[in-house]
Structures are given as C-alpha cells and as structure tokens.
Image (cartoon, rainbow, N blue to C red):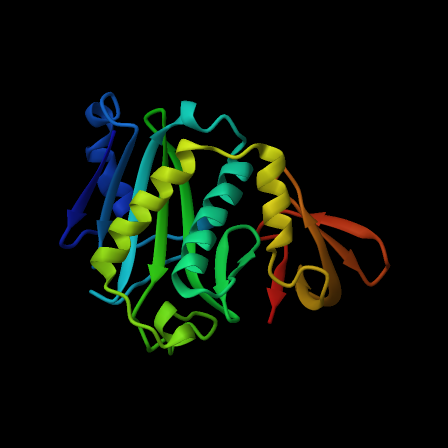
Length: 236
C-alpha cells in the first residue's frame, strides 16, 4: 500500500513527512508528501533548493530501510536513476546524472535529491523544476519547460512521479545494475572537463563512479584519482 499527501505550503517536505512516518509506515509501504510551495527547501550537503510557488515540485518519500538493503551511496544513485528515467519518459530526451545525484537536461540542472535517515526510515527529498522560466541567480539551473518548451501540470506530474517511483521499487534493481546504469548515464563521462580541486583548476576525464560514492577522474598526470562529493567541483 502507498499514500501521497499534498500540502498547500510548507518549509520543507523532508521535515513535514516525519509527522506521517511513525504510524503510517506500519500500514503503508511508501508514504509521500508534496507541495508546490516549499519555503525553506534543502539540498544535498547543506545546499539550498529554492522553488517558485506553483511552478515546481518538492516531494519527499519515506520508505522503510528494510526495502533498500544498500549503502547510502547506492540508494543515492538508484534514486537519481529513477528520477532520470521519469523525466526521460516524460520529455523523450535522455537526461544525464551529474555525480552524485543531480539531473541534467540539455546542460541544465532540473532536479536535485536529498537523502536522510530518520526514525528507521529512509526519507528521499526530490525537487523537480517544471514550469519556472527565470533562473537569474542560478545560471546552471533550468526547468523541464525551459529545456523542452513543453508545459506539464505540476500536481499531475507529482502524482505520476509517485506512482512511477512506487512501481520502480516494487521490482528493485541489483547493486550491479544500478552501477551499470549510473555509469552509462554520467554527465560528461569520458570527456575532457575542467575541475576545481582545492582551489586549483585541472583538466580531467571522468571515468566512473563506484559503490562507495567516489568519483574516479583521470587527471593531467594520467593517473586515476578518486574524490568524494565537495572535494572537487566541475566547472562547466
């Protein structure tokens, strides 16, 4: 069983969903909360996630940790794959996953993900930019509309995504499958890119992401080096 709640407005869907989790997860396999007006959204590793009211979706999903017998890094990848596949089906364009879990559509970030463990549950927060057109303060961001010139109704999209997510986890992929799909859809993989590493710019080539959450990059010394999130920044 599964249930999706709608909130007219909230600070953070990840915070709000905790109010539903303790009792409901005893009866439901998947609990969701979404809003089109999130006022204090959070992104991964302390980043902020801001959305314009009624133009974008903030949705949080809670599942028992027993449903995901993987390391957090693998769950992170798996969630990104599900979001990526949903947007691909919707737009008929193939988005990329910017390590570790941003969704890039035609060179612009249209979705971000935040994972948290609370009360023996995994809480997955997802932001999807749907209709927003102005990203003056976030030049690397875009929306499904800006990248495709197609309009989708956000309420309907939230409900469709909830059903899509539920169907995907009902037939879970293996860790090996998750890693294979991730590495086949990595943004800028096998391309020369510029990275900021501790304030120093270097050229490098992304070769793979691994099960422990590291990104492996071939740098100018022609050696492979591994980095964790926030240890390196791609400049593009």
